[in-house]
Amino acid sequence: MGCREFISWGLPLVFYGSRHQIHHQSSSMVEEPLDPFSLVSDELSIIANRLRAMVVAEVPKLASAAEHFFKMGVEGKRFRPTVLLLMSTALNITVPEPPTELQEALSTELRARQQCIAEVTEMIHVASLLHDDVLDDADTRRGVGSLNCIMGNKLAVLAGDFLLSRACVALASLRNTEVVSLLSTVVEHLVTGETMQMTTTSDQRCSMEYYIQKTYYKTASLISNSCKAIAILAGHTTEVAMLAYEYGKNLGLAFQLIDDVLDFMGTSASLGKGSLSDIRHGIITAPILFAMEEFPQLRTVVEQGLDNNPANIELALDYLGRSRGIHMTRELATKHANLAAAAIESLPESEDENVRKSRRALLDLTQVVITRTK
Image (cartoon, rainbow, N blue to C red; front, side, top):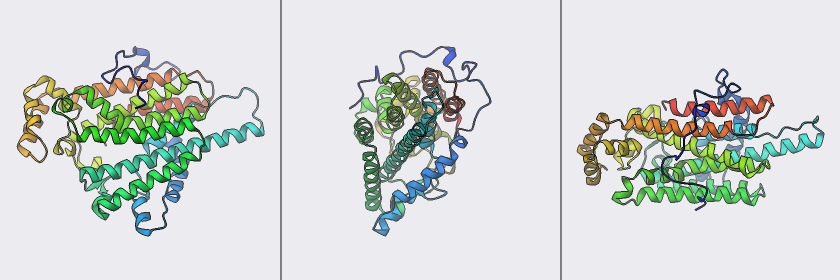
């Protein structure tokens, strides 16, 4: 399953010391916070336009379905492409002598290939959203009607398949078998994670280790392996590629943990989906798992079933409100954010201002992820 690089699916065995904490970075990193998205806004616009062009199809209905979440105003904040563009600059190889025309051409070509990774990642992500909405029978996404609700399940599934096929074509154009293998494995992980969520046993539903493994497959694998692909395309060592991977993995886990918190605290408008959507579908996430450790009787409620069972949902929410489940989930998200920050701080030093600025922005993103409200 491509997961031999992990020591454990459970909580990290070692957390870094104060020099790696988000609020205690080394002096070279402690500057005014940047807006990570504004640093790459011009490139994000280029990628957004290119994505809209890439999802054009011969059949009008399919074209309309495929471009549903790539339209202006519905495209989201493009979190994953932002991370990947910043990672591309953060890993720039400094050329000591004045750049020649050949070196500049190679740098431009590399950037185009790394942009392609950002485009492929976004297409895979949106395809997974389309498929997830069908499986979850969702009626909203990003604050608007979900595609399956507007056009039906069959067209939503086909649109997701179409996006994956376009992602494959773009990926093949890179002619790098290691990168193709990495991102192909991501698609396998997405399917594996969704299947794990649908087919859990009682013990698995109540296991934090199982939850983290499923979360890696469903959320963190895409961003972690895409970050690794960025490093591989730039010709970096295995060590640097793994630091990029660790950043993406831990940022992805932190992101999903906060998502799980917000599902209990946000409104439908702020989250772009119905609040309490997970628990209403019987999906057990970190806040409930932590609450279960404090109140073992909550497991009985969970085992009785939560899907479409308002009385049990209310009971579970009561236990959650009296527990430290939300607090513990935020703490775990912060630990993963710290591990992501540690990976960036462990990259080889660079005096290049753009490299340093992008690394600072990646550090700032770890804070953005754990303090967001939507």
